[in-house]
Amino acid sequence: MATFATSDQLLVIIDPTARQGDGESVRIAKDVLSAGATTKVCLPEGPEEFARALGRRGSRRPVVIGDDRALVRAVALLHRHRELAGCALAVVPVGEAALAESLGVPAGPVAAARAVLEGAERRLDLLVDDSDGVVLGALGIPPAPVRTAAAQPVDAVGGHPWLRTRYRSLVRTLAPRPARLTAIPGPGPSRLRVEVDGETVVDLDQPVEAVSVTPGAGGAAAVEVRPLSGPGAAAAPLLVAGRTVTVAGADFRYRADAMVSGPVRRRTWTVREGAWGLTLPVPG
Image (cartoon, rainbow, N blue to C red; front, side, top):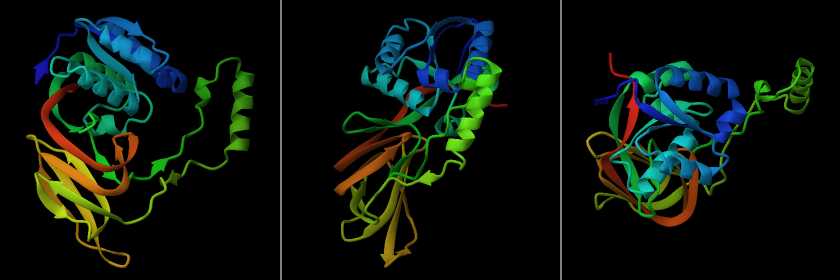
């Protein structure tokens, strides 16, 4: 791990979704970072301005305040410009942060901001596909169920207290039920050929329920294939590890981190060992 001094110059890029969804957490994170380091704050209004701000970071260490999509966007941009090797990212999660937390980023704006100031760079493996897409945490075929969008937080509504009260009443009237898990439509069991390092794990004659690929340690990905042994009966999962994973078959969609892609008929993912750096708390 490489350690940093708290006097580092930081480029703080605040994703617009975070500003709109939880302005209070954004303010707290910005205040903690500004108190511990020299910061330049950027407020991009969309993906193009986000990319431009990241590209003009100079010697500043980039810090993304935003959700998992913002983190993946930053890594994808740096990968596309072949700048991952010389750039350690940091993130303060605001919004959906299951991916960031699974990578070791603390929950909460204060803890995450302190990790940016006091933490160390950890090099992590990356999955890169044959269309130059990236996977930081997990790949799933077919896409896993996703949670429907939640209502806008009341704190995001400005104005007088009476306006916030009327907003709460309106939310209760229009959205009385909590968000539910909604599955992306799919054809059910798929017929796919899955190859790991050139060896066939399952072929087209064996229907599969799901395939998952996760970057592991030491340049190997953990691959799990769940075949069907009979009508509606799931067989024991097949567990393998390798550096290259190829999936082929009828049109299929897949979830890579927070994004759903496809349909495609063939895709290959390759592990890039230690390809990107993320600032995380120092162990102990």
